[in-house]
Amino acid sequence: MEGVEGSSSGGAPYTLKATKYNNEDILFCIDVDSESMSEMKNTGPNGRPITRLDSIKQSILLFIHAKLTINPNHRFAFASLSKSASWVRKEFTSEVDSATAAFRSLSVSSSGGHADLTQLFRIAAHEAKKSRSQNRILRVILLYCRSSLQPRFQWPANQKLFTLDVIYLHDKPGPDNCPQKVYDALVEALEHVTEYEGYIFESGQGLQRVLFRHMCLLLSHPQQRCLQDDLGLPTTLAKKLPATDSTPGEDTISVSSQ
Image 1: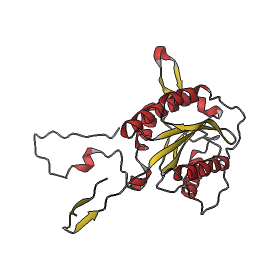
Image 2: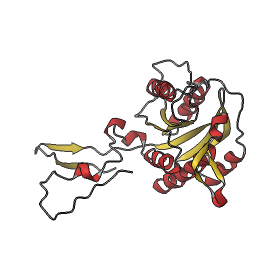
Image 3: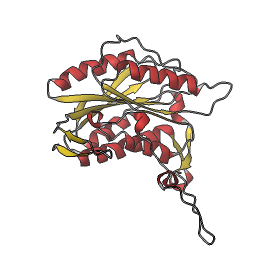
Image 4: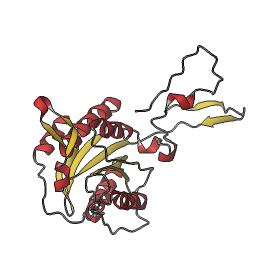
C-alpha cells in the first residue's frame, strides 16, 4: 500500500505511512446443531424451503469468490461445531472446489447441548502459529445458530493469536429462547481471543439478504479495519443530506436503509 499525504478538515497536515498487510488463512466454523436446519423466510426453486445451513453455505461461497477476486493468495479451511469443534477440511487452500467438497461432508448433529469453543480456539491458535511462520495471519469466522444455548470456553486472556468474527442467526426472543444472552456470550468470547478488530453481526429476521450483507462486511481485512462501532452501515441518505427548509411545491423524499 502506498503512503498518503493530505490535510484534515481543520487544515492540519497528516501522513499515512505505507503499510503491508498479510495474506489471510480463513477458517470457517459452521454450527451444525439442529437449529441450523431452521427454515429461512426465502424459498428456493419450485418453492423448496431454504434452511439456515443452506444459506450459510451460499454465503460462504459468495465470500470466497469475492475474497479471491480481491487477492487470489487468501486460503480457506473448514470446521464444524457441535458440542465441540472438529475439522471438516483441514488443509488451507485457495481452491473454490474444496469448499463444495467440505459442504458435502457436513452432517447436522442432534446431540444438542452447549457448544464449547475451547477446542476451536486451540485449533485456531495452533494454525495461527503455522500461518505466522509463512508471513500470513489467521482468521476464524464462526457461524452460530443456537437461540437458547450460550457457548462456553476456557482460554487464557493473554493469548490473542488470531482474529475472530461471528455471524449469529437466531430465533426471536421467547419463553424458550434467550438470544440476547447468547449474543452477549459470543461478544465476550470474541473480545477475549481476537487479535485484530473482530466483527460480530446478528439477525433474527430469517432473511438471506441480511446474512449475505453481513458476510460482505467480513470481506474487510483485519489489519485494515475500523472499529465496528464506526462502521455506520447501512447509513440512510437522509442522514447524509444537510437539513434545508422546504419551500411550497418541493417534493420531500424519504430514503430508507432497508
